[in-house]
Length: 202
Image 1 (cartoon, rainbow, N blue to C red):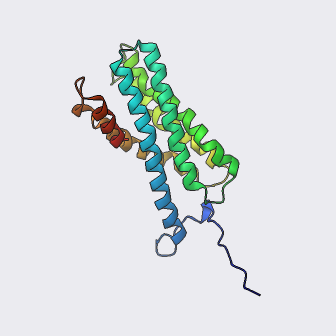
Image 2 (tube, one colour):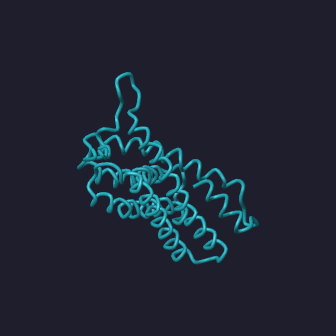
Image 3 (cartoon, helix red, strand yellow):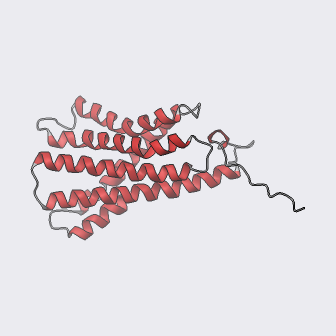
C-alpha cells in the first residue's frame, strides 16, 4: 500500500509571527510576499479605474454634484478591487470564508466613504486647508478603511488593533505618493498619459 500523501495545513493568522532570534517563519515570508503582490495588484487596478473616471469627468466638464457622485463611485470600485486582492492573498490562511467574502464589500464601502471625505474640502467653499475641520476630515479619511477592516479581523486575531495604526501610517505615505504626479499634469496633458501617470501612482 502506498503511503498516504500528507498535505500541509494552511497557516493560521496567529502563526504568521517570529521565530526565536527575530526571523520570520517560512510560511510568514511566503504569506507576506503573496500579500504584497496581490495588494499592489488590487490597488493598482483600483486606482487605474479611479484615474480613468477622474480624467473623463474632468474632460467632460460635469456639474459638481454628478462629478462628486461619479468620483465617490470610482472610489468604491477602487476599494472593491483592493479588497479583492487582499482577500485572495488571505485565502490560504485559516480564516472564516464569510470574512473573506465580506472583505472586498467592506473595503469598498469604506473606500467610498474615504473618497467622499477627501472630496469635501475642494467641493465646499470657505474651508481652508489649515482649518481644524480639514484636519478632522483627514483623520477620518485615514481611519476609514483600516477601521472597517479591523471590525472583520477582531473576531479572529487578538492583536487586530495594530491593523488600524499600521494602516494609518501606510495610507499616510500612500496618499502622499498618489498626489506626487499633480505638478506633472495639467489641462493639456493627453488623456492616456494622464491615466498612465496616475495608474503608476496607484
